[in-house]
Length: 232
Length: 189
Image 1 (cartoon, each protein chain N blue to C red):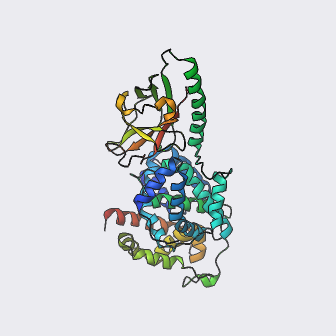
Image 2 (cartoon, helix red, strand yellow):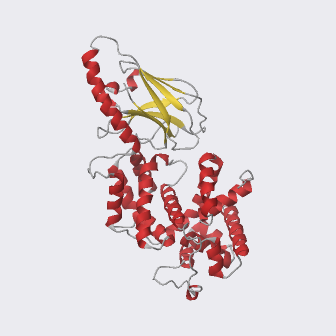
Image 3 (cartoon, rainbow over the protein chains, first blue to last red):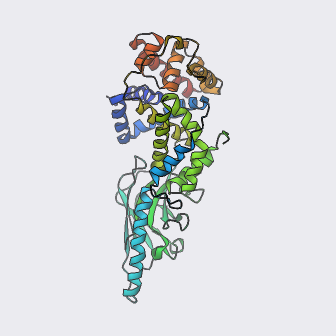
């Protein structure tokens, strides 16, 4: 599968979206798509061109058992109030540890200055172009935060990175902490940080890709490309 | 449940909330899109039981990968439709070539059930602005090849059987048709 020739890449992307690329060739193409942004871009362009054809298919209501099956697969315990994506489960675990640790700290470190908390934000794989990671250091008093990329992140000129504090599950929406520089350290101002950041206010930090100026909606709108659980 | 097209803004919002583990948003996303995605899957995978199974897998995938949706690069419904179509096409892998359709299906789109045939669906799509104009510029057998591939998930070999044309001819038709569609759509003509 020689995809160095642009016309070949275009032709395969077209057949992939039209559905006639099959079997082993289809699987190889999908594997390459995950590694090569130019393939992903060609597929997306073809999807924009061809998938509007699907609107001509008359809608067909699936039976209720399909939704029940989805619920069973995603939430086997069937506890109706507990959203649990893979991340959130990781964050919940971290939050549990956090609760215990905060108690322990409160008891043991009454006077000693708290050490800074280091959070490593790893690539989520949500978008191909974001490798590496970020390291965030939070002052032990929770009133200062410095975040820096492990290596400079190449950003499209019309996109920015935004940092979020993700609260423990069920305690509210994520809170924006501000925009991050992609090429060096960002020092976040004291007044942007929630006072409870290290007292159970956040279970994780996450970075999303946003339009210039940051998310217009108050929640992440682009892919969440880096995330890391808070651990003490 | 009404089939009014959900607004892209609503869908993008529910996807963003889904990425954060919001079950209520995920359920609204399902309600707003399940009948469209089920129809897309069912055209390609005609076994209803399997199609229901596939639809479950589609939404499980959506739940886990909603964080990868980028509103700046994709329309939400396009993104969802791509997941559904890919899952349905992959389910056809096992049978390399499905049994050829009965001879009476060859003309007039007469399918055993009362669903619209691929040519009729394409005709509906033709009524839609630019894509329709571009499709109309293709020769009829080339248009039909695209309709059979896109709507019913037929492979090259199956299209060749269906149209009683040599495999090489069908492959060349499709390749040229897709190229022609691209220059027509991208040229805005």
